[in-house]
Length: 66
Ligand SMILES: [Zn+2]
Image (cartoon, rainbow, N blue to C red; front, side, top):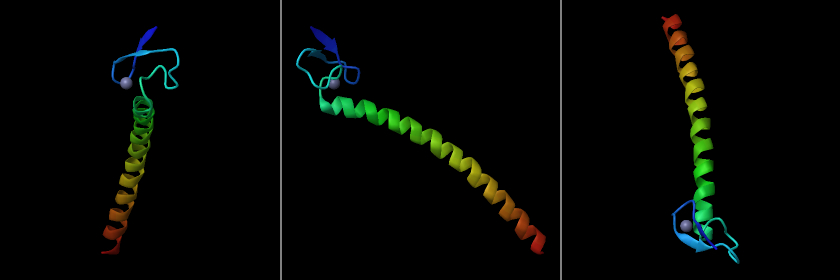
């Protein structure tokens, strides 16, 4: 039975394939990497929000000095 690889779309024999439903280890890692990348993007977005808050309080402090 042939299955379509979710990463590259190549048809690959399902039986005897240790990386199924992917065609190869490379495609399996690419798919896992895509998930990790997505989580990383969400995490860095939260980080930039708190960074902006820090910048605001620093500006207020500088104004109070004068
Ligand atoms: Zn593939």
